[in-house]
Image 1 (cartoon, rainbow, N blue to C red):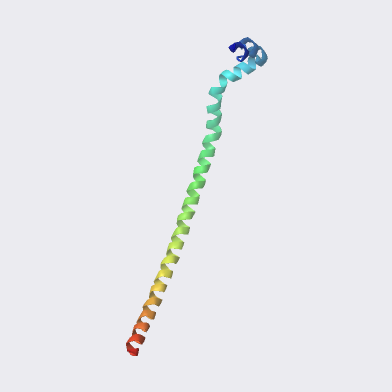
Image 2 (image 1 turned 180 degrees about the vertical axis):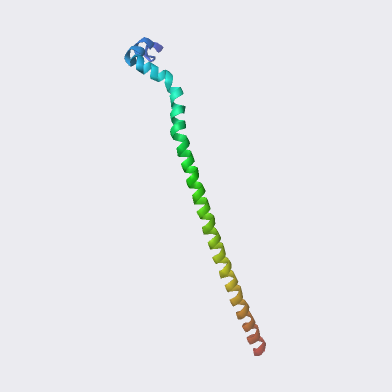
Length: 95
């Protein structure tokens, strides 16, 4: 098998692309990071800002849920204490 059949001739490629095409291929590794920096950096910063805002809102929600849960636990303990004292008195009276 001959590799010439699989590999295009460099002269044919240059002729087909022309000077602008070859220049684009040569400059592409330089232009992509520059373009990504101009677009990617603001996009990354916007994503980070959104994450910070969501985190701060989430902290507030978690704090509210925690307070509500603490209130419910305290109420449940108070009810158990009242019920427990009443049940102990009933058991002592029945004996």
